[in-house]
Image (cartoon, rainbow, N blue to C red; front, side, top):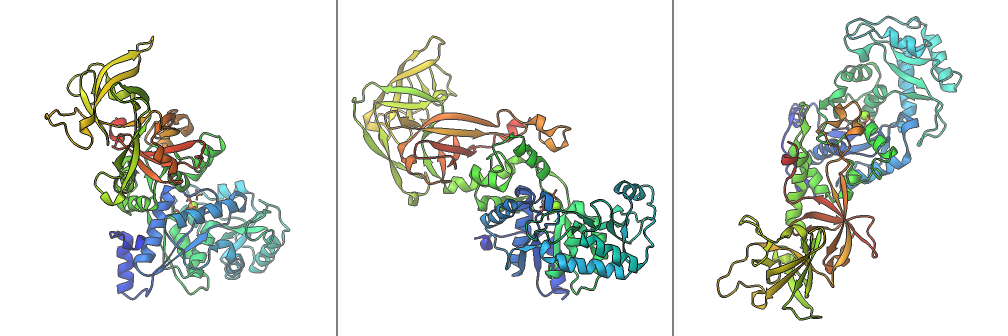
Length: 554
Ligand code: ATP
Ligand code: MG
């Protein structure tokens, strides 16, 4: 699978090439380090494709490591969903699943080492006092009164922290670096805090937990990671990353490189915001097909290869930008255009009665499953006296631009005959309810011998044989391109992001498999939803046939 994909170079690959040719490294080891505090989204997919893609191409390794130092926000359900999503994307991590919590003993040992070297101290200042002492971007910080506590005392305090003798917030372990550094993260950052929390991996063993900046670099070093790739917001933290590695006795010196996060138009890619959408029931769950989560996108009908293709097309740079939704949609549309079987489904049904067709007769016509790929075979489609067509495919009168059914004009019914409209019935509101037509029995699979031309081709379903199906049409989840920039992003939810229709579909769709994708002629690409059952077919529209975003955005 992914091994055959051609991945273009980028600045990170150039660094790796240099490191390999200079002999700095003989192999490449990367990792994907999610925090198990939410479902993965399409931004994570970018990071996954980058880390695992590099490992594949350089015949190296990529670890899956849960960065699990915040037990209160984490959950084993998230661990499982993340594994499922990485696997679904087509990647296989190196060896066992890893957890930062596997290294809590070692991390604790390195913290003790820093204390022993006079490079860390236990601070009993209140959290507010610590914050005040940090200073600002323009003003240097102030040294804590606990900064010069003796090594022996610090060792004893830290042991008591570990033994549970101090309350949460009472004290913390801080690295002794530089309170006047121009990098805020270097102003004696906290590296351990007290937290009486049950941990999904380590249970109640610990009541002190290491901070991210201390944990991440050491975990990388323990695992022998050569290139630690993360997003740009960690740029400054690279100083702390290097400081920790340089000041503890560990062999490996991984290096951190930063790339820009993926931002996608008309959606949000922040776990905090996605959690809010789920918890406030704005969406039906993490896998709501409107969600930018991998689980949502999968349910929507995206394939792993389309997701990987998207990650290739957006590339990897240090430039922040907002990627257009049409980029994502083009990837799945290009793929399904080739791979999806065609079917006929009518989303806004209007009745057609063929007056010269025999009552009670059914013909089972052959319909190709793909217009340009014969290997995809054919299926049988029933044809009878009464059909459903799309409401918008009929007008009583119209100008030449309207290429569909008009009174006294002829169209071709897809996979079937020429059809001419004679007259129509209307209800009290003037809405057309039935169109009465005649068909030409000599036009099945051939043009009429007298050279008549059809105005266009329309799709249809035999009324007697049609299967009723629920069809879910999705639109962008937000009404503004960058909802994250709004004061209240949830106020910009698009109320029409989900529209449900009752459609009539051809009977062969009863045999469709879960998640199978189809092109419904002229209305888009659809897949069978998880909610589908033998009693009620449910389809999701994955994407329309054409890009409608460009127009909508204006
Ligand atoms: P949190 O706010 O919980 O830290 P996060 O989005 O950083 O959320 P992590 O689980 O820490 O989530 O992310 C795992 C990896 O995925 C990190 O290396 C992170 O840099 C990367 N990542 C997260 N969001 C994006 C994004 N939008 N684009 C590219 N990479 C991302
Ligand atoms: Mg993070």
